[in-house]
Length: 189
Image (cartoon, helix red, strand yellow):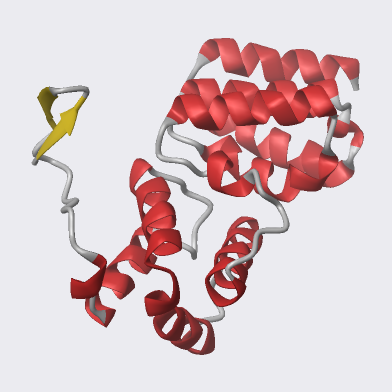
């Protein structure tokens, strides 16, 4: 698929299965496919998650019925993703955003996600914690680093639930620098 960006055409990887579709041509099957890409039953977050999240917000009301039926059919939404799913449903139904930075926290561009976390960290705003914590599973190292820094800066590692999540996370982390940062956070505790 090709995109026109700043008068230059660049090619997207062929391995991705994303197409540009007019909103008027979106059907329930497409919406269901986007919901499936959210992988709501696991803590796993992939690049597809962010694209599907943004797409569902943009589709808006057309996605409401399918999302409602999904809620009735399943009870297997992972704890980390319940707030994300409820945010999405609330936005689609009411077209209002209480937590206005959430779309930026789940933006497909990792730079936008990281800078948003750092902005929240600077204001020491803990209201976004439930949306930031799932980003420990972000595929991008810079996001995981930003989350760890956020938790450390606000001394949230003293919270037993967050401490437990960090303990579980340290075994899965493949980046040695981030692993060391987590160990430093534990030493402070």
